[in-house]
Amino acid sequence: MAFFVIVSSYCYILIRNSTFNQTERKVSLSDLRTSSGEDAGLSFSIEERGGMLGKWDTVLTEESYERTGTYILKGNTFDVTVENKTPYEISEWKLSFDIETPCFIETAWCGKVDIIQQRGEDTLEQDFNLRNYNHKMIFIDYIMNNDQVFFPLSKGDRFVYHPSLEDKEYPLLRTSPNRANSFAKVGFILYGEETVTSSDLSTAVLTYRLRRRISQDPAFNILAFLSILWIFSFVFLLFSEGRIMDLEQLEIRDKKLIQEIMETFSGFVDAKDPYTGGHSIRVGKYSRQIAEEMGLDKKQCQKVFYCGLLHDCGKISIHDDILSKPNRLTDEEFSIIKSHTIRGFEILSGLTAIPEACMVARYHHERYDGKGYPDGLAGDAIPFYARIVCLADAFDAMNSNRCYRNHMEPDVIIGQISKNSGFQFDPDVADAMLRLILRGDISFAD
Ligand SMILES: [Fe+2]
Image 1 (cartoon, rainbow, N blue to C red):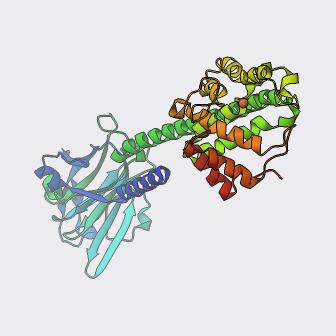
Image 2: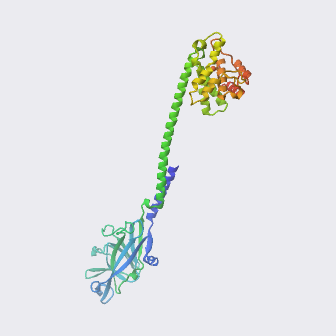
């Protein structure tokens, strides 16, 4: 989403900048004079250099002009300075003069001049490099006098000064303000029967286009900053996600490892009694199902599973002859068997990652009515996980074949759980187990 917003914003700035660069801007000499020449764009000024008498005065005769008689034209040189006051380059400019006072243009430098003459209904137009052109190619109105060519300009005529892009002397005003070449100087000479002055050129209009780089757009810096911020955030997010994925994979691997170690360990315990093979893993699974049914969260359910898996680990220290004895146990032997709870508690006390495991090992043979062992705890005094494992353990015992009997029938098992609810078993745990059985989530042995 952020990516599309940034791309759209860049497109918007590109279009905005393109519009800015294509806009034709104009400033007139009168505008500049009234605003004291402090225009925010380009400014220009026209200075009279003056005419050197005798050199610039030119005699026209009646042969070369419509008027009769001989008279003198007085020349005046004009220097035009165009100054760039913007922070941008200038891509193009031209200077237009609408003629108010009749005059003649004879030469101009550092550019071409487009001369437009109105002659009745006709418009004559031709552009020249007035310092270098073929006299025979002139097709607008002109006067030849002693090899000098004069182009007459009447009221309504105009000439447009185009700076020559090829002329190396011509600065295109590409530099920023306050630089030495942030201005251009061009010039021309006008003749008249009366000396032409700069006030006769007050109609001058400068037309130009700016070339703003996209990086000069005020919004560009903000967008660039946001883009960099977004890129950093994106990279950080990628890195974080990668790191989280690594950690998650590490956690999955560790959990698998822990579970495999525990299952292997419980397998050792079960291996001591061939008639109870797989008992620990089944008790673990039933315990987890009961915990889930009672609404415990995922972590708690996993802990209950581990507790169920390890509940009989104390049997590792009971002699095989007693564990696998097919005949009835003596009181002493039964007492030894019962000690697996304490042994399990001692073994699992070192398992600090799952502190509940040693409690379950110790108390999973306690009864809800207080008649169990080893401590005779009753009701809620028995750790909750131990009450769950107690029922899972009893269910698996009833549902499995033993050396001295076959497994019980389902209705007998259900009857035993119901009958012992509140006596041997926590009634809430028993209810949860019965719901699982009735739903078919826990199946019976064939
Ligand atoms: Fe046990």
